[in-house]
Image: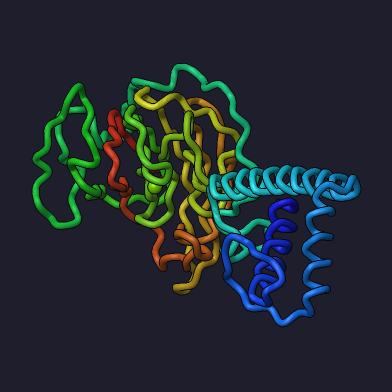
Length: 324
Ligand code: MG
């Protein structure tokens, strides 16, 4: 580059000499007003400088600097890309409000993921005790209703139904304190991380125990399966792989009212695939997305609702034991 530059300077000077009638180069692109002697001296100096040893040292230094610059730039761009990709890949948010009395925000991107543990055994195909209310035994939807009131006329296959086909379901009966057992299975086909196997058990229509694929995929800690959504992650992650049957055993203590005001909040214990993941955890309020928990309902009972979240999650063997 330096050689070309110096040759160009010399060429331009010679051109100007040509214009001035002192030399006869091959072409003419500029009209210089330099003294003929100065122009000639510069032209000759440039031509000599090309062969001067110091110039080669300068050229070598420039080449080295160029290599160093390119190397640093390459590493910087690669590092920045990896950082941005990693940040983008971390599920969760950094701009949600802090949970009450907590150092974590709602759906906090930096909240630690629950430790992965192996699941228990003996939690599937559990026979309901004789004092249980059977909500679904693989034969009918008699205990359930749709939001729109239309009949639930979808196929039941192998004793299970698909919530994406039925749509959101609520129990016809309302419950306060209870023990609930249900079994569920997420689709084997990978879906968007926020949607793969997303469903949930809404207690009293508003407190969600999250269902989502959590074996080969994960979202923010307080959104994994077994979480009290947006509030408390599961204590550990005993998820089975997508397509396998999994279970929840939920023990719920309903909120209590005194003169139409909340006097005792709700508590929940969740056993997920035979493993304790919520231990008599106080529920902070209605579970919501990206905002603080909502207010408590002014009631002490409510329906059990199964969430439809655009994913073909299957359910079977659902029964409940009201505790009072
Ligand atoms: Mg959900």
